[in-house]
Length: 612
View: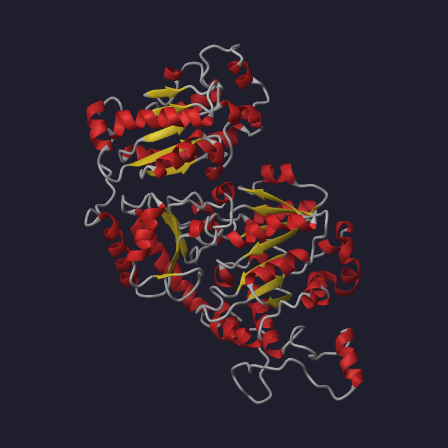
């Protein structure tokens, strides 16, 4: 069968009455003609149903359908997406074990993993799941690697094949949450995932009329490894299906997080139209993303299928049909976000995604409210960020509602982004520059090559300027690829590629007349030469060195410590700031200053020279 046919007929067993819709079996328990038959069911030697908490004909039909469209060996339904994640994880790990997880998670999943420490289970959160980062945290105790196929709301794309190779190398169970992508867009098992999770409350159901989750088992021989001693008996009995065998015999049965038969029926009804809905979701979302990208009042727009996206190449590799129906954008402040949402007429403000209706939420004040500020940054959540789950309504109505809400903030001043101002030192006077910066909608674009954005001067300055109502956006090395500094162990190819990709994106901002604040930390001449060759000497206007409390943490050669002790004179991270590739207008030398002092100096400069 082809995919859409499977959605309707996959693993279908016609009811004895001839009904073409699966009946809803609203029965707690099931009578049998003999105690021998019921004993066989409990032993697993006879087919049949005993109690709905354990199994139910309607739920079973839904599980079979999901297994069919995912190309899996089995599926186990759960009461919610969160319970599905909990059951899948706790089916594998025990006290003393470790998990590796992407930090680009749904807020509830992040806090669940964080709180597993009370069970003696450690979670290592990583912003990027590249091999180098993974090798640094993996141990013999690591049993699970968990990630979302497309992060919600970070929208980072998981390179499933590469992560799968790592997991196979270390005998780690690879769990992928494919809620946002659905089986229509991708089957993670085909690319190496061992287990797939869905919150069926989203796209699979499609109309927000029931809560549910499902755990999909791709089958694996990893459970035979001595690392998984708790699977020993199940591997012998169930082979590749040891995961499902243990799940149904232990925590899946004991915890009681069972899907209701009515929810299973509603999911069966919803999944039949998944192909039609997802096609429209993806088409509409790309059009909305392109619309938002074209307006200067929108600080930034994040959707993997935009060519400007950091994840565009991965989106092209894995998501030929589209990158699902979610996008995020930033408006410069929380107040603007709330004003925008309050002005909407068609789009609904609620905490869900994947509905036929277009839905909106301010993540920082809702679904990520209980996460720390550091966790929010790792998850790609900012105070001025809005998440939009684009529905299947007529695109003209969706965009029309967004446009009217933007006008509620800025009125009719909704011009397209200008690309006719080229701002370089040699052809724009300081007076003209100051006048340009006084105009509404000027964006400060921060870019750093070394990563760890949550602790850099640029991101700290960005947060301060947000509080002042300025429009800003940050790109750092972690968002693009690897760090720049050679003493961190990155190869020349990594560093050159990182510089090239940041340069391509940042040059667009420079050419559009946007002031660019660059944070270059590397003191190595070879790195500066590569920047000069790839970006051009007029790339940015302001040079910020890294603060000492940050640099000392990643300074195995002790260069910054020597600078602080006065052993290196006039040190700002490069031999001389005016020989640097970025031709700076101001240099903030921070080897003797704290992070807050650096930000204070830069804010004072910007206020005096640019906004007063």
